[in-house]
Image (cartoon, rainbow, N blue to C red; front, side, top):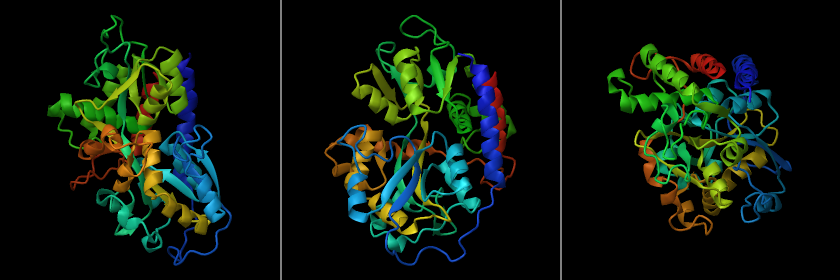
Length: 392
């Protein structure tokens, strides 16, 4: 595997994405949010993370699309995106109605005028949304809501249980070279997330292990703190066999390519465990980054009525619970924890529902540190430096 060659190509793609995001000019909807829902247009186009829009094709038990289509006449099309940068780029291109954006994309989409304010009066189930999410800063700006919460969860440490008979307790196993319990080094047996937001994972690790750096929030880093995180990632580079962005590629790396530890999503953990692979996951002592995803509507959505119908449907408690069971996430609607046989009565507890306050949810880093200072490192610099790390 020629990682340097791959990351060079990827660097060009990521820079292109940022340029598209920065230069895109959307024609803003000056009329404000929809006032009433009319007849459906017969279609709705959604950009999502893998596993978020299921119609029973992978497993017939997991299907929250087919009945929606029958009930509304709105045929769902789904484009899977691998990173938040890809989601921003696709939304800037236009032609889509909705996107399930994480916090490191949502505020960029709002600031760029790419998504529109949502009229929550047209979402009857809005009041069932977890109060911790209703006014979250990654979709609420100046009192206006720009989306409907969908799911949330942590980025977990996934590991091979044959190599780790006892679960690892720290992110040490992916950041520092060491001999693993099977007697072999972790060098060449670790993978890491390809998105530049992963710099926050390094910062969170340093927050715990190097408190003298004074890191408070892993998304608000001054130059010294940022440099320390980049240096840790350069150290990790010697261990990494692949930087992953495709969930299915990461699963194959654990099956067939000798990867034994990595940051991951609960989705991959669930899928691998379901097929009997020796896989476990853990929420390490340093805590974890995570995602609280919001379904957001394009400012020029071609199918706004069907889009609103989907926004309401997305809050159905059974859908919320079934999706949580499938992805390993947590429902944005608390009732989802008790409304799905697939999830079961202990599903939310298993998926880390009680860890909400310990998760550092993805957000877009800006120069504004949030404490009156403006010397934090913006996301564009995160991308530039992380590309250099991956390129070796």
